[in-house]
Image 1: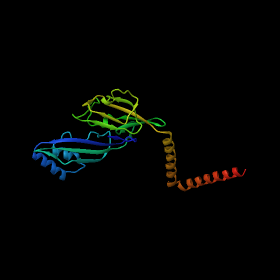
Image 2 (image 1 turned 90 degrees about the horizontal axis):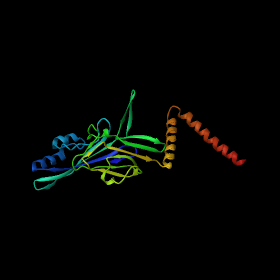
Image 3 (image 1 turned 90 degrees about the vertical axis):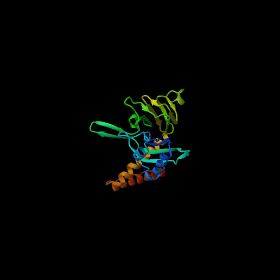
Image 4 (image 1 turned 120 degrees about the vertical axis):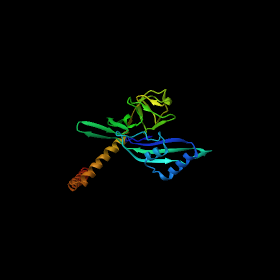
Length: 244
């Protein structure tokens, strides 16, 4: 799972499948031709694969660009092996306000804690394989890997992956993986601090956007005239100062 700075994610889930018997192999090969590549329910019911589901979704997150990528069967006598990958995009987070309540939609909840620092808090409700206690349940032989944005500083993580057992937050890391079947109270929080240069660029981009918005709106011509007068005045005053 590739996490982007805007809180969206590109997700790829890979399923290794053992196919027993020639009849099942024929059914799978027919499915490669007849089944849609963007409807997971058809594959789920046709092939009777209970684990063939995507694990991020529901009302707390928006998913798009779903694609099912099945591989051909590698036959071993009358049986076979294959892989089915599911790829999709988790859209960037957004806030929905209804009367007095506020609902956060997205894989991460983003919060600006400082002018140049953004905090990312994992939304456990975005995962479809959690229980009522907030534990993330992984299928046997499953590995969950998150690739974080550049310069991500982990501030809270639980449970701690085996590969990071000697590390204590805060620390910088680009990739995190869990292999345990149950991740109790699954929690992840990290932050990213923008460089001063990117903050300045963002500031001027926002000014440019607001100017373009004004010019293209109903007040466009008066705003443009004012801008021209200001620029001409600055140039004129600069020339006068040079002469003096």
